[in-house]
Image (cartoon, rainbow, N blue to C red; front, top):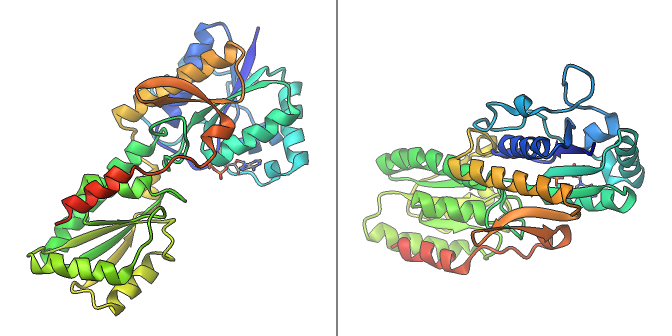
Length: 330
Ligand code: ADP
């Protein structure tokens, strides 16, 4: 009987559970055993497997019942520095060989896929990835699993901040996650009706911003929301706040970091469906003999993208959406 393993790695993202459920159910239906690995790559180093009750670590179709609606991951996730070393990767490969594992599904972001590439160099088994990250920074999929839920969470928070900003006639700087990508900030800004998004992909000129903000003030805007990506090149939300104040921003300023709330919560239906499709395709591809590829949905079509392409950093925020935000902020 074929045996595959599955792990979640790196930052957690809503929908990882839905993806795990799909891999387990599709593989089980195809007569393949799925061994759950806990705590990401660290679990491979430690032989830390899913507690199945019988010591095998095997996840049955029932073991993933009623998890589709939950954020986080029942397998836990983790970051593992030892796995970044050659001996760590070797140790992980030894665990897979010792447990007669033929294939591995990795649910995670770009770092996790980089790790998968390294593992593939020393282990003869097959590896398929699923894009689990709120950052939406992987090519080969329009959206990564968890991204749209994180946008929804940030928008809900900003709707509340808008109420208080409007009442006090303030400007709020709101920092969102996204690492080096501006996707989360831009989509959050568009969906929350924010006036500005400061993202790594475009330069932030505080003097120009204050000039634009002053025009909006004259036009009668009571409040301003500026969504700032954590990876914005400007040096962080407090630096930007200081610069706007120094340039004579006409509104009193407040700054808020949304932080880890963006990672949690129940995945949206869109994320549950994407996660199910990606997990299903990953399991089928792996069983079919594919390796070194990530399952994603691009322009409505499920497809497999080589790891190197997925992590190449070619995914860029759409210029037309940057322009849309400008046209909406009048
Ligand atoms: P994400 O997958 O969400 O981008 P990280 O970048 O933290 O998260 O990566 C998750 C884990 O993947 C790391 O803790 C490490 O164990 C592994 N990893 C990341 N980059 C590499 C690499 N270049 N080589 C080997 N392992 C890596």
